[in-house]
Image (tube, rainbow, N blue to C red; front, side, top):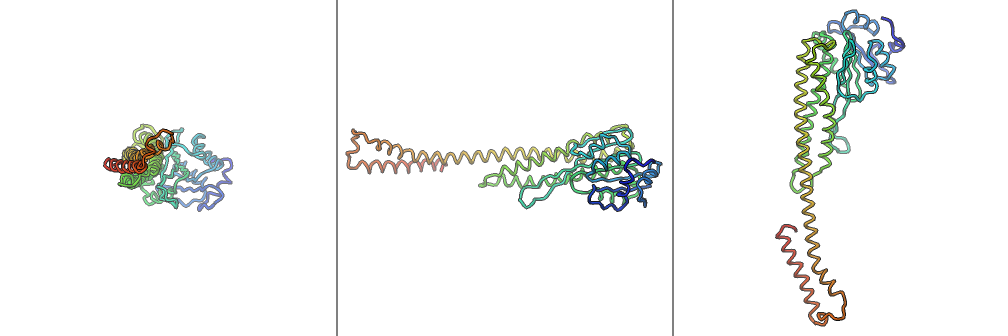
Length: 351
């Protein structure tokens, strides 16, 4: 295999272990019959894998254009697939480019409460996988690291890893969908807490918390729902490259788990929508009660205010002004009207 342009410079960085904080993280392994081979030359390992001896698995973290261009030339990747790895922010999808299968998988991580005390938030990322007949290239952007965990899990079972590159994709999807279901459980716990806060008697409901949780659920749905289409193709499409017939059952299992997560998420969305309406109804009811109290207070003050304004007009012909008991009579009428209105409004529940 001829060395691609600029590869000799990059090959120096790919000798394991890789420790280069000035460049994106890059790592690779060569597997034969499911067992890692002791080789520090990626070009030699790629040549052996292309000749039919196992496959090469390369992993990248936030690759730049130079790194991705190098691997694009090494593995013969389509330029559009390589471009997605650099730019990121792509919805889950599955595409076929000649001999390679390209898949983007959105990932989700539920972050616990921070110092601000705000509700938990959803942190999203994405993993891109390129499957060829003799290679797997994975690229991760954002989210928490988990590819090493998947690699160790696969290496613990040589028979599992010996099945080929599709097994790596299956493990990635299985791990991500399990994360989806765990996130659903976290959302369910938060929804229960918010539900208790919304319906507790005597306390004004916090609508902002409900809205915040609903926004996070919408962000989660943007990662969860688009994955259904690619999984459907993996379990039913008749001629996908590098995915054998007997692999469909495994992807069907992952799809079933995804359906369960989707159904639970839709149910949570409906519950949160109902909670928003209930919280707004409670706030509206409390506002109406406050308006009743204000109206009652205004009515109680209106009678003495009216009497005072009448007797404050100072017309020359006002017979009541000459009465020696006029002041006391008017004052008594004011007090009596206030007391009567207070009793009336209290019986009506306005005070």
